[in-house]
Length: 305
Image 1: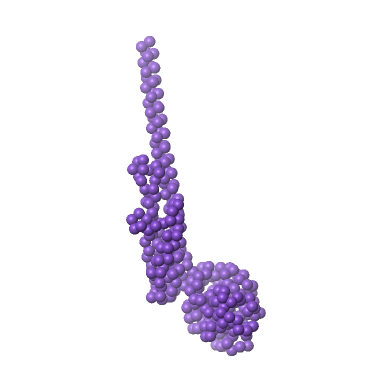
Image 2: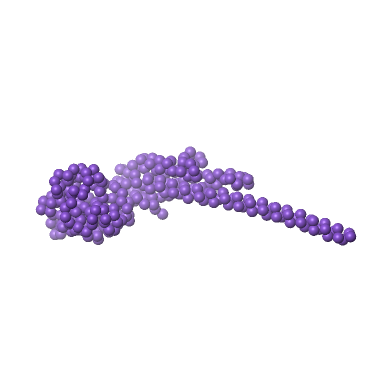
């Protein structure tokens, strides 16, 4: 009988120990799972914060588009980058740079010439925990950084970004399109190979286009158009716009008024953005062609590694 009671006592002790171990195991799993939820939430917030940093860097880079460092508006660039961040929602509320918990740091690198103008953004944000505070962890710090560059010129332009109009540097003489091939001031033509804004992918210096029928009525007054730039002079020094040419650049124009069936007053809009592969290349053509492309060509803003 004594041995039987002893066995029952041992079994009761073993059962109690097992219950305690099971309880501790469940508690440990609960703590680990709870911390895992907090960590997952922190990664989610980090992804949101990275998107905000990328958008802010791209915005800041846009306002650095200038060939001359002294003309790059760094103050405006920082202002707009911070505004972009302030308009963005992170973890259910607008991002606010309070200088202590949530912070945004701005830096720029402005260079001369066609080198990319760079905007760098660094951001931090503490993520409050729901379960981590049970073990003394009240927040998880999250930090991200992003870098974007404004590139002068493009090696390629994406499809459907250009209207079927080609201009030369001669349009800047009187800010006027002259589409009459017999005119001494002939400086532009509609492109035979394209229709409307259905251009193919354009490679600078290798995509060839040729003169097509005049369709000035297709251009609306007050509208901005992305157009191709072609050589202003023909072969062997001919001072006339050739009937065909390689695309050597792109720019934007706005139509001010139509003067005749072959003439319209315009304004060239330098520094616009366009979709394509950023980068500069050796522009073929005369000095006038080269200077016109560099001063008026499109820019490309892109994230950088």
